[in-house]
Length: 147
Image (cartoon, rainbow, N blue to C red; front, top):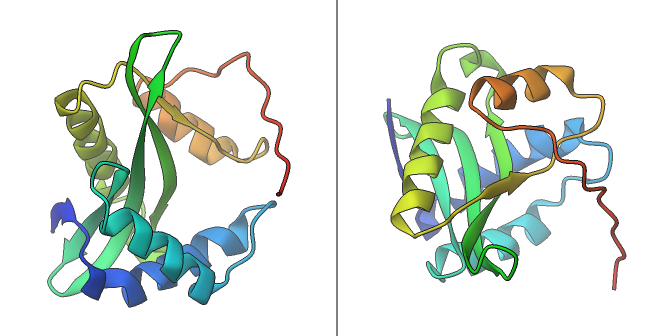
């Protein structure tokens, strides 16, 4: 198994992973056509972010999106970690930890001073996973408005 950055050819497999993820999340619905468009925008624009993948041979078994922006509070680049998912049959084998480590190293190389992520409030397993990797719960509250 190795970790690298996704290419356009990976999008069909990435959409399978996103169906798995969005089937579990309360606020999102799987729509491979829409997700494919989003993935194309990230993959074609490295300054926007990177789609990081875990590969087992020709198969993608895990992914995470690392998106970049600038924090005025920190006066520096920061990253947003999204769409972290590992196929169910590959979980509990260290793949998620390797994806997180790769994302952290990439963010540091890009000069980021913080990584932010969101999880469902009741996903205790994800909370424990991120806490084991040094993430702490923020006191900030998320609000969204579709436009």
